[in-house]
Image: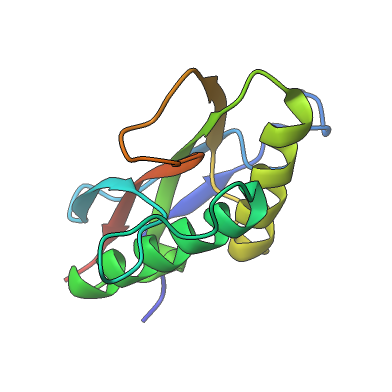
Length: 135
């Protein structure tokens, strides 16, 4: 089934951004608002302690599982927000590269933020997402 999400490129804006500048979905699309995807193992422990890339990958796994439970896939995501517990730009970029690579050509609008702390012990990364599907 084709995605309800239409990515919008803004050729008048910088091409340095590694994502579309906007996205839309038709009025008959069902929106799916995901809780922040955290790097948690099935037993509730934090995955990949101390590893920004490993935690970003674990967050992607959590997100794709939540999407599947809602009848969607990563290609149905319309936007993301990536939260990284660090004040170092390099740590943010490390997490972002994992997220960017997971989305591939479906480079949805995204915001990358450095934050002081996240909710679970040893948590470094969290990904928020919204998806849109046609039923």
